[in-house]
Image (cartoon, rainbow, N blue to C red; front, top):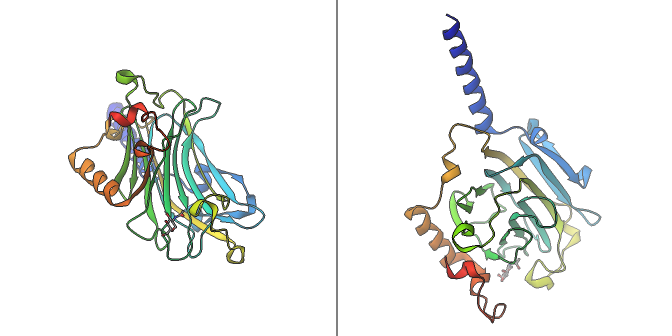
Length: 275
Ligand SMILES: *[C@@H]1O[C@H](CO)[C@@H](O)[C@H](O)[C@H]1NC(C)=O
């Protein structure tokens, strides 16, 4: 009798736990506003968050939780219209001088011209691993899912489930630093980067179009605290994933540090020769 009821009890606990894990909390439960206070709005009972940027300030938020490996998904709708000079960031980062960081950054453009999706990986304070992409859709028309899979084997950047970049853990085999010892927080911000963002700063922000607004929905984090459904913790790219990533890189990649001979005349960083 006691056994049955405690089993039923733990069964409901598990269902409850899975529900929390699968749907994530509301934006006010999951994040703190860190910057530009009145410019961060949480709407629709915590299901929608908007960031805004005007001439005097941008805005941003940070996760309450820290993550030690995670699969993070967020739906984002970027600043529409003339978004030149704006930068929307979405990244994981630890703190301290030798910090780790996994970056998505969306650089705006004049109306009708493509956004640039900028990515980077920092390990123990060192980044310089930029790859940039255009997208195969207009990221300002609808919400699209941008995901970071960070596990002990690799980091995978995904757009609507399509992998666009993989950074492998080659630390044990090749001594290349890999983020694996420092917990990270999730950050996002919308700020003015007109000095460099659009065509290297040639196109400036049109402040008559302010405020600029980026919107967020459906945040979900799978963490290693969750003892069930943690297949993401060992996930890597299978052949289908590799083929799709190659398709993106062939058709939409506009910059890759691993092929920038001007920047690395003495030879590419070690990981470039191994991937
Ligand atoms: C803006 O549009 C130009 C022209 O299509 C393109 O070369 C550039 O990559 C786009 N993005 C940024 C951020 O400048």
